[in-house]
Picture 1: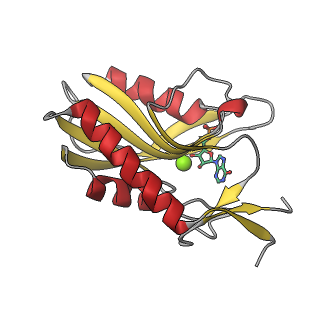
Picture 2: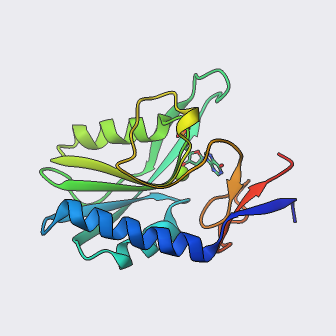
Length: 173
Ligand code: IMP
Ligand code: MG
């Protein structure tokens, strides 16, 4: 087990997810929305959020892969699993684990917009605003995190720790 410290407890996350669900329901009032889970990291957040929401939802999944050199900003984003529902004329709610530089969400929002979505909003459990390099705004953000690498509740380090119910900071990485 790597050295880690709890930053958001399971109870804290559940409380925040319920608040976000109510806030999102309030915005969509009576509309049908396509909620898109960004795999893999958002799976627990997505599952908890959509079950706490009252909005009429269609659900779908997308998976992104980044390749290239993160440090030199020559990184590219690719879709390795696309949504299956047509987004033409639909309200789309993207559900993501973390927005960091914003590269992935900048790419995905442009892509969904090119697919004819009527509106696109972003719900991110964690917003690392200070690290932003692309102008991506989370319409609904669970927690702000200025720094640190975190795992648990879907978030991984080399594919590990996704199933932990709380969120931890990895201390020696
Ligand atoms: P961005 O494209 O730079 O915004 O990167 C977002 C992606 O990087 C997230 O969807 C995560 O998969 C990953 N990521 C960023 N920060 C962390 C972290 O602290 N823990 C785990 N994954 C992270
Ligand atoms: Mg992710």
